[in-house]
Image (cartoon, rainbow, N blue to C red; front, top):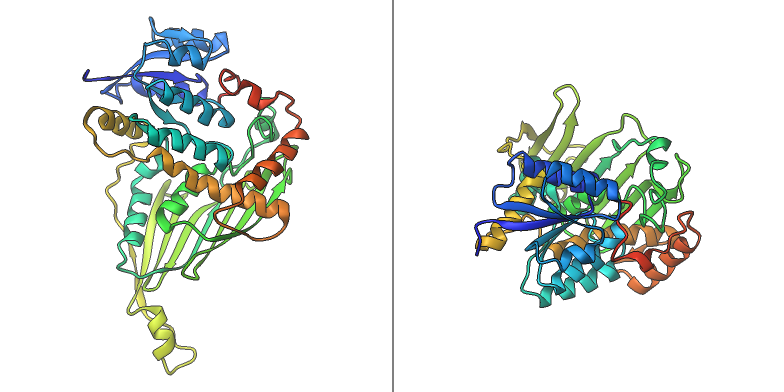
Length: 392
């Protein structure tokens, strides 16, 4: 086997271009970008300017079957991630998919089944898993040293967007073009981190406000309430309408409280932990004083500071292909965060709680009704293999 993996970028929009730039800066030493695909000729010309001699194709299919690559990065609009990944895997290529894994879990489940039958690698670009802050928080929670989760709350409202942002592309913030709003575009990383750190909930109740702050047809303000198998509860609040907004993750365990928050003055995330002197579940039962508070102490939690982001995920992808080293995120894990967002939509549409796993057929049917009334008139399923005009 070669000492480098030949990679083709499918979709030369913002994300595809970002991967190319990371490679040009020498951040991916075991990768060689040899091809690009996009239906927009201007984007292919841009790829040629960045990488003289790169093989260019105006469809994903042509690139996949060109023989010029060992692997592809799928950086197209959301609906096209699964069908392009499926075609590439069936053609014997390794696949790195941008987030989200897809728009609806039924589609992603089909992709996972194809990947499991393949001997090729299917991975997903959950680059926030490389962030030392979230790695440390997960380590603390998963260690079991501080007991089970009792409550988790994530307020992630610093996604502010203007109307101009949504007006920048006909596909943006439409059910037919994008499949959702803040939950599908801005929050897949946080939804993944939420379940990666705390595990999957068993029930979801959500209110997804569509077009509350912007002239859009999809959700731009969301409040999710979750329940876990052990009785713990969680909330996830997000919007693109708050300014300046906040990013605060708080996890209450039986023997500690973890606070992960962005410090604007220092321009960095910090982790603080209040470690209790004994488990709160024990103290509640044993204390003979009704108003007594359980004592403990606050400490700032250190971490290794590494934050390799997209290049780190791609380097792990190459190392896995070349030497079998661990991936940052296996592709099949992409269905977890998507399950939460699908459940949130379904709960909001039905105006009732939903249990996990969700009724995937019902979700599909209700999504089709949303698509039928969408402003974005292009029929998504008819173009899934070739249409990359909406890359972001």
